[in-house]
Length: 391
Image (cartoon, rainbow, N blue to C red; front, side, top):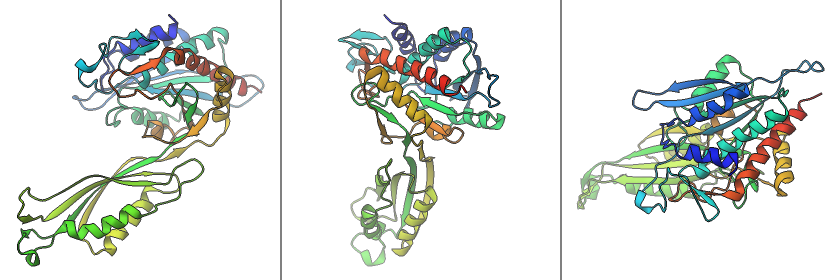
């Protein structure tokens, strides 16, 4: 058994359902403190939803040949996991790490306790051979990524920004691969903007429609137009912005009553070619053009972000090729991640982790053959970024 696998098993055994860290971060602190990391626990959130965050930092050593401050690489991730679902449907208990058929099973195996274990062991190996690196290294872990994400990474990033901390590179250990570790990295994510539209009509008896105004009928032409709008064409890194309805509700439940209002929930997943403001303006103008009486409430879940193929993408891509022979693909697909918060204070953010086919599913797993290559990629990135910062 490798040290990476052993640590991944220890972490999986912690039942860390959001927002409970279940002592995962304590295990990490025990490994980081002997390596010279200053570990700070930041607790946030209301009494009934306490979130545990970890900021662990090891400053780099400035060299005599350069006046520049050491560059900083941050590894970011989350120790919390989603609910297990029906326990009876698991072949083995979700918080009992189980080796079976060349796989490690357990909740969080892929998303994302294996990534955390791989980075910690990569750090140990890197510092064993390079005890005084020029590179500054930090870890940012939270127990509120799978939940509302109001008291997790965003809180730590705000604190770091207020302190004037400089972050140069960030790797988030989200599961990004499709078939094998390294085949895909995320160099950005779409933004998410949700809205709740309430269209107002006049309630009445369904047999006397001339005495009422059916808001569903009033909304229908505008809804048909919204479905066909091209919000943007995307770009080389992003798919076009997409608009989707998630819920619609109108009526009292009675078959003979015209409703007085209809409520529509919708969401934009937007590229960097659009902004929340531009999307809000266009949608509201369309509704007004249809003469609707409406209320509209918006929730911005996260801005789009993009890391162009600069130093971090180049170093990570080269490390993947060297360790696996795979020419990685860049992608911005999928849902949101905590990268949306980190990108505000760090210019280069990418996501790199194991295959994601089983995440959030019953019998979540990671293939054993994907674990050590991930650790080796992380270690090589540390080595190469450290060398990159030398004069």
